[in-house]
Length: 91
Length: 109
Image (cartoon, rainbow over all chains, first blue to last red; front, side, top):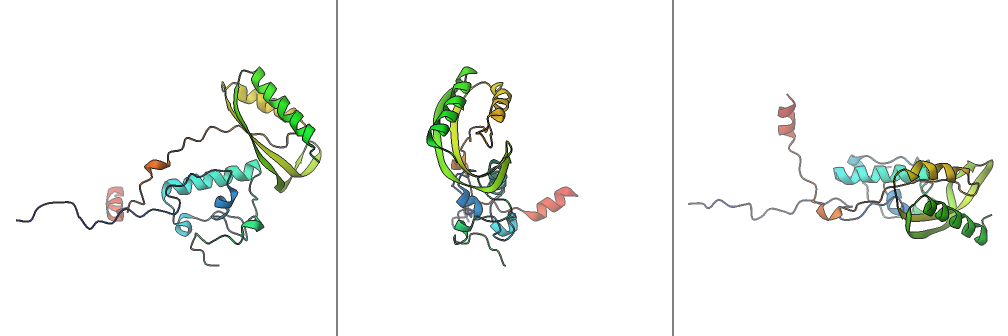
């Protein structure tokens, strides 16, 4: 008789890139990684691949950084242009 | 054009004003002086460089409007803001739960 049990070969749930990292409006480098270098627009969920919560937090933090004068609005800070790519953007 | 004694005077003024209204200042951090991401025009001047300061404080919420007024009249303050303390909750972050699209579609009908 087969024993009923949970799937033992279950993989742990996939984690998004920021799945343990505190998002703060002050670390402009992290926020700039989710912003387009040409226009400065924030990438959508299908590009960044973040979970619901983190995408909302990032958008809120970016908007806050814009208002408070931490991050430029229309472009990406040139010193952060050589950062490693997180989002799957196709230029 | 921000000299050290002048910035010290500005900070002293703001902290004293805060303490007057009954707020407890916990910490004062200097986030450095850097060139602003965009030119800000305030108090009949176009600013390019600025010093960033973060004041940790606890106090009654009635201070907020009076302090924003007070800081708005200060010529040396370019931009002011009050932000709530971030409550960090990242330990509960379970990964991306796969959404069952079939159920969603049937439920909406």
